[in-house]
Image (cartoon, rainbow, N blue to C red; front, side):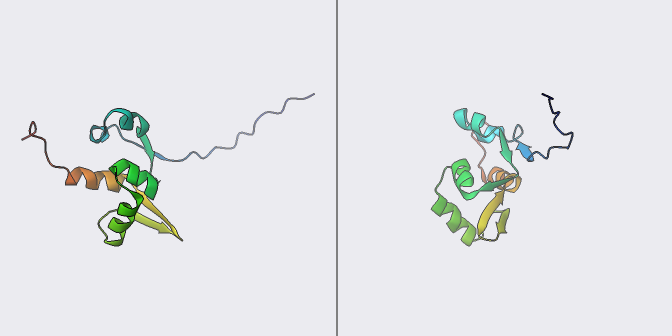
Length: 98
C-alpha cells in the first residue's frame, strides 16, 4: 500500500492580533484567554472583552458609540484593534500614573 504525501498547497491561516502591547488592560485568566484575538470578533466576544452583556453591546452599536463595527449581511462583527484602541483612550489614568 502506497503512502500519499500531503499536497504542498499553502494553507491559509486566520490572521490574529497579538495583544502583548495591550495586555495590561486584562488581568489573570482574561490575559491568558485573550492573548491572541482574531482581527474581527463577534458581539459575544466583545461583550466578554468589555465585561458587559450582548444587549449593551448592541445598544452601543445602535447609538454609534463603538468603533470598528463591520456588518456582513445580518452578522455584526467588531474590529479588535479599533475596539481596544477605543478602550485604551476611554480609560482613566490610575493614581500611580498621575
